[in-house]
Length: 512
Image (cartoon, rainbow, N blue to C red):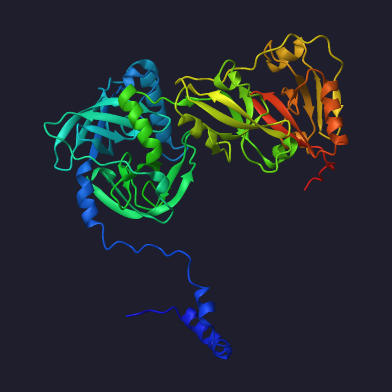
């Protein structure tokens, strides 16, 4: 039986006279409405594909020993919940405090905590891929195959930045393995299936489509997730996301859910990122990533205008590690990296991923925007250390005595030279150079950009400044040239950042 929406049916009846009165459409006009691309038909079912792939997916149980409360001074069982102000609440609180501070709390034995997840076999010899968070901190890892065979696993390597881990099990016979596919070929709308161990129930299959690509969910610097509506729940972590060819195009890693269950928003690590990390974890025990040695920030429309860029694109360099690959290639603060090794850098967050995926010691061309034009430099990519930190800028010689503070007209801030008293007051380093911000007026460009007293202006329009007069002179020159904004490199308690400030007249705001 067919069901028709009454509202749609009524609208069709009202349009009927118009259609009857209209002249007949030609064949050419009809073909003009033919869709350019047609969707692939939905599969008749997933049974054959699932039967072939299920043996390659495993359940993973990890356990770890948790110290008793007695082993952690000042920590004990939680106080039962009672209405605020209840005499029972006060009774239990006094009781717990006496035990904690009086040493009368009974010693609890160490406990074993377990977590469940999923994984998949990528080599018949017993190499298994899963999420790092599935096995993080585990004392013991157990893998269960589809035929209920249980095997002890050892950890070959793990990578916190991409949340990937590689395990090894020993088996008397070759294990059924699955293969990585090309995640770059996965399109939004393609059918996918997820196989895993939701809620510890064992091998389960769900189907859906690729909902989106390139998702950044703020899990790490290399976020580039595939989003899918195939049901992913607790326990699915580390399991594979398959395309219709039966190849792994993603590792199911995270879900968005206010309830803890699937609401159709799951995220998978793309296979083209995963397979490189997996190979490195297998061979070296850790991930080896390319390193450029720069601190970067997003190019906003205001910054783009200040630098003469037509579009707000690229990654703005806000710091260069002394002696790092970028420093050796003469990349400077204020440069905008537009292309790296032939790949466009559309926005800031794409650069770390591109660099990380580049072979170590490879010489690559880097196109930058500097002084109003493009330049191409050659960089030899280094290797990122696990504890790599951003290096400070090389200090110059101490500044001589400076003139008194002054107001930067139209910007809403006062600046002054850095003195010994200012270093103590704002906890500035002895090698900190630049011009000190001593005050900011509310409702002005400086306040709108979050500037505050204690910040230090290091550069103005990509040129170093050491006196308040130098800052003012460069601002006035930009105004005479008709520029709409000025770009400043500012050192704050949060680090270096580029700050664009409008040079247009800014009337004081009226309170609302």
